[in-house]
Length: 381
Image (tube, rainbow, N blue to C red; front, side):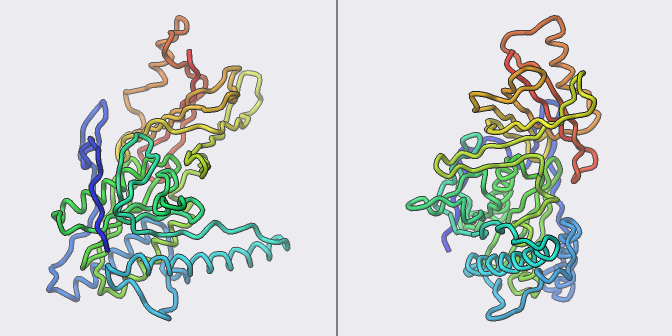
């Protein structure tokens, strides 16, 4: 299997989360490993890793989808066959989930069920720069997963816009140190969390002896789980990963809907705001569609996204056309209050060149207790 190439250019220091207020090292949660010679304790360590993973993603180990039959081949026993093995697992899970959903839907409604999402496809992509990253960064993850409908075609068949990528991982290169390999895997996870509709994301690092699964929580930390190819648990871990990548609402922000135009390779986003003006007796929903993400930074600290409307007829709030939406995951109850600053700037009248705020919403993060999302809606002054 070919090896992935470095990211270029990527000027942020990976293991530091930078913000105006502070600079801190983000945490990596990693269970203490026993020595390789201690086979019995190493087996217990892998079992603890798997149980910790299930607790983190809130899945039951008895879920039948995570325990498929071992025929015709068990799979997931070596690095060289990983992509083939994981695609077989994806096909099996897609079929199982479709059948279960169809039966349940028919039982409840007695009508034909809706189409199930496209097949999730993994590809080895070490020589392909994945396009349309929000800040223009060029990177070549060694392994990428995306839905079949989102992969490009022809000479670009191994490319998919970053806004559609569901997993980006590293196939360890012999030319790098172990720490360099892991840093590369962390980098791809950091880049993937620029997806505004992801509250968390999965990454991986595969080498000759190990399968390492990464779970990055936006605004928080990275969890690292290590398994040997010889372990009887590795196959179950891989099926758990694929199961989560298909449709996992706990890690996805349902308030932001992404739409991919394959012809233009552009991903746009739709927000549903809860607006209450003076004349409203209760909040009303305002749909803001066709917004393009123009800025993303701070995956593991104060995560910020800025969206700009590309519509000639943007939606209106309080009579003003919405041009900019800023989505920021930050610490609760901090001294820095951007909403208050904008209000102070425009207190004596509009200041040209600075956006005016017409709406804000605060949303508690379901994954991190001391974080909240502030949604700020503005128009050009």
